Image 1 (tube, one colour):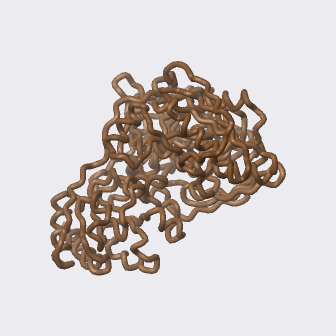
Image 2 (tube, helix red, strand yellow):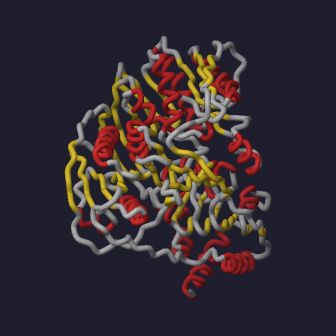
Amino acid sequence: MLKPIPPFDAAPSEVERRWLAGEGPLVMNPFCRRAVAQACELAAAVGDGTVTIVTVGPPDAADLVRGAMTSGHQTDVVCDGLLLADAHAAGADPLVTARALADALGRDGGFDLVLTGRAGVDRDAGVVGPQVAELLGLPFVGGARYLSLQRDTLHVRCELDDGWAQVDVELPAVVSCAERLIDPCPGAPVSVPTPALRTVTVAGPPAGPSRRGAVARAAADRAGVLLSGSPDEQIGRARSLLRERGALAGSATDRAVPPTGGERGAAVAVAVEPERPETTRELLGAAARLAAGIDGHVVALTVEDEAPETLASWGADTVVRLDGSELEEDVAAGVTRWAHLVGPRVVIAPATMWGREVAGRAAAQLGAGLLASAVALEWADDDALVADVPMLGGQLVAEVTGDAAPVLVTVRPGALGLPRARATGPPDVRALKVDARSRVRVRSRTRHDDLGALARAEAVVGVGLGVDREEYLALSPLLDALGAELAATRPVVDRGWLPHARQVGLTGRSIAPRLYVAIGVRGAFEHLIGVSGAGSVLAIHPDRSAPVFHAADIGLVADWHDVVPGLAGALADERDRG
C-alpha cells in the first residue's frame, strides 16, 4: 500500500497550499518506498511472486504508482498497480481510506502479505495499516526493521518507539515498514515496460466519522541574527538575545487533576499501555479535564496490575481490567467490547506503536472517528471533541473534529504535560475477559529510552555529525544549564550513536520546545522541519554558509568546542540569577 504525499523541498507556503488544495506534484511517502522495495525483494526470493501497488489518492497519483511499478525491474518481478482515485483523499478520515483499501484488497484477493509504510510523514497518524488489518481480519505487525520469510511464517524484528520486539506471524498478514528496513525503491520512474495501471474512481466527498476544520501555520518566522566576533563576544550577545526572546524562562504550568465526581455522566476512557506510567498519568489527567467539561467520569482500561489508588490519583474514577492478553489486537477487541456495553464519549490511547494499533483497530470495529496524533484536546461549543493535530512535519496545525460518539483519539506522548496528582480514595475496579487470539507471537521485547522525554522538554540540544559520539559528555554542562534533553539528526541515529527515539526530523520526531540548540548540525531540510515549532532556535556551526542558519533565530559562527563551555557557564549564571 502506497501513500502519496506532497514534496517537502518546496517553499513552506507552497507546500501548504498544494497540500490543502489536494494538488500535485506528489511523491512517495518515504516509509512506503521501503515497503515497495521489500515487496519486490520478497517476491523475487520466493521465485514466482508478484507485487501489486495499491494507493488511494487524487488522479495525479497515477504517475507515482507507475513509477513504483517499475521497482521490480532489477529483480525481474512483475509489479502491477491499482489507483483508487479520490480527489478528496487528503482530507479523509483514516477509516475512509482504510475501507477503500480493504475493499480493493478483498475484491482482488489472492495476496499473502500486505506491506505499508509505518506512517505518512505528512500526518504521522500511523493507523491506516492496523485498520486495514482489522477490516480484512488479519494480524498486524508494526515497524518492521528486519524480516525473513520461512515457508508461511514471517520472522520480524520490530523497531518500536523506544525499543525493539522480535515477533513471528503466520501469513497472510499486514506489516508496516520502518525507515531502515531496506534501501528505498527509486523515487522517480524507470524506463522499463510495466503492465497497464488499473484506475477505479472513488466517487463523492470523504464522508467519514471525523472532519478537518481550520488549519493554522505553526512554524515560527526566524529572526536570522548571525553573530560575529570572538567566542566570548558571540556568547555574550547570544545570552542577551535569548533573554530578550524569553527563551530561558521556565515553564509556569502547574495544573492539578480535577477532583473526582464519582461514576456519573458519560465515560471518557484511557487505554493504558503496559509499562508506560508517565504516559498513563498524562492521558488520565487529560481525560479527567475532558470529563469535567461534560460532567462525566474517567475509566482506565488496563491490562496491568497497577495499584488502583495510583490510577485514581492520576484521574481514573473507575478501573476496568482487561484480563487475558496484552497484545494489541486482543486489547482492541476488549476495548471494543467494553465500548459496546458502556457507550463512552471518548477513548484515548497513546500515539505509540501499541496505542495506534489498539485505537486503529477499535475505531474500525466501532465505525468511529479517529483523531490521530493529537497535541491538544477540547470541547467545542456544540460538545463535539476537537483535537489539534500537527500536519506536514509540524508546519501546520489542523483542528480535527469527531462528531459522533464514541470518538477515538491518539495523543503524542508528552504533548499534554503531567498534572499534579490528586488526593482521592480507591476507585471501583471491575474485570472484563479478553480472548487471546495469539496470532502474533512475541519472542522478546526491550526498551532503551524514555519516549516522552523530547516532547516534555522545555529545552532540547540537537547534535549532528559535527559532534563525535565520544564528545557527548562535553555537552553535559550545557544540558544541565538548560535542563535540556539530547536529540539527534538522522545520520547520527543511522550510525547508532543515539537511539531512534532521539531522532528529530521528517522521518523522526517533531518537537516544539521553548529553545532548540543545534550543535554540529549542517541543516538538512529533513531535520529542520522537525524543529519548526520551536520557540527559539540557536545554531552553532563554523561554516557561515551552513543551511542551519537560515532556520535559526540566533547563529554562532564558531567551532562548538570554542563556545559551548562558555555558553554553558553563561546560561547557568542566567539560570541562577532567576
